[in-house]
Length: 145
Image 1 (cartoon, one colour):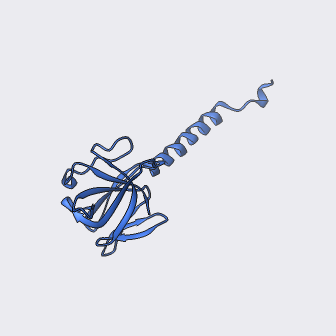
Image 2: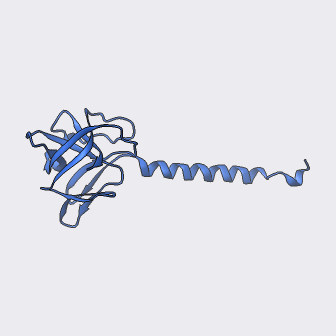
Image 3: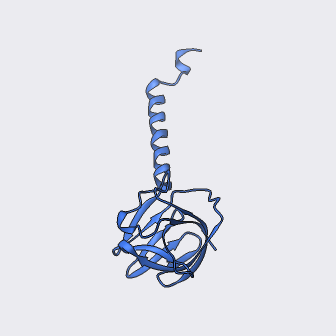
């Protein structure tokens, strides 16, 4: 092969750097985080395939540390970790907007599928704020029914 048909080394290097930058941006969007609005916080889980099959049901409340939690019909309170992409409502409304399901506001009852997990929550999840820990387990929501 003659030299005029080969890619210049600088072009290959620039292409690889650009590809690495794009890949990094995608992973940031799928990581878990603690989000806050109007003094209320909640945990948003990293992107996942779900796979947990416990039922999470009850009323959305603001619990310890001004963190969103669920109060079950039995009276237990669990800090919540919402599905990836969930945002806080803000603008004077306290609750969340769950992708594909809509708004859930404080005082609303809801049913979800997911699981219960003790902190630390695992890879991709943020640290649970110490002010929010009011129970031994966090209700990790995979889907809203």
